[in-house]
Length: 141
Image 1 (cartoon, one colour):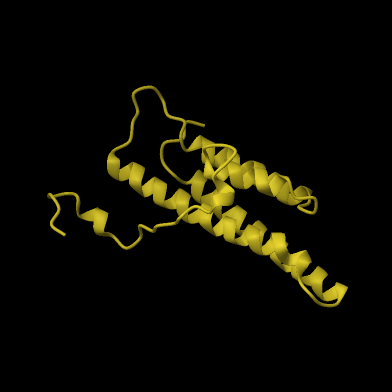
Image 2 (spheres, helix red, strand yellow):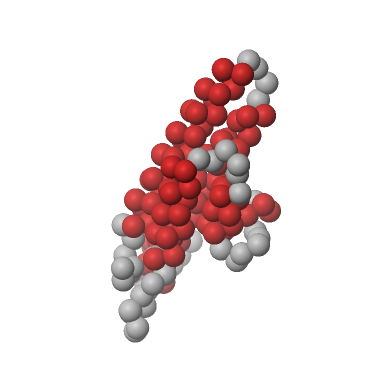
């Protein structure tokens, strides 16, 4: 596609599309907040993951805090949106694996190992999202 000079970045491969699952479309208008609500509603999440979920929401919200008059270009907004979407999707996918872990068939010790493995994967995805969100430009905190 022919783009005006300086707009070629719109064709970069790093932009990814994600159709947000119905389960993350409410109750809030924010997909990451809805994901956090779902995770915090889990009876077997654990305190360590609760802390990471809180940091996930905090870092996501801080991306939108700006000093008065300090806006972002369309390109900056687009690139930030791409990072937020990518990490929210990855965290959601890890959450889904963790959420259904106890429902798996098999001996109890095997299921417990699966739950623990998926808990660790969810923690890793949350930590990576937190790092990525914290590294985005624009936060005033």
